[in-house]
View 1: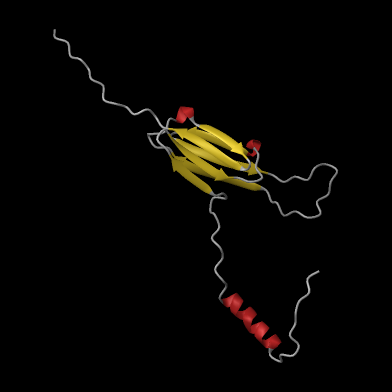
View 2: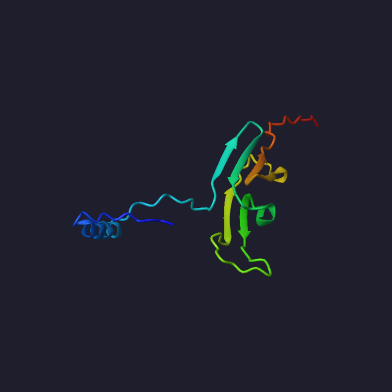
Length: 143
């Protein structure tokens, strides 16, 4: 049980509280920046691959979709919060979830070899780099 403290000895307590409330309405405190895309993401690189790590707590691999089309990697998630049959929801704070995020793959990425693994709420996508194309010497034959 929450007990509110009230200063009864201060004759201006109610007035100060009303003025504070007015200022909070007129000049609200800046809100914390929310992630526009619904999840935190890191992209790191090593010599042979790029690695994308996304924090996706509470999601399973069935909730996620990962596809490559026209040089773009698309990560999407969809989760519904249905109440199981025979139950009644008394409180629902976990809402349904749906988001999509796309990444343009550069020419260095071997799209055919991309791998993904979901472990402890972290999706790790490994994007192997293509083997460097070295110039090939073509011999010219005399006629």
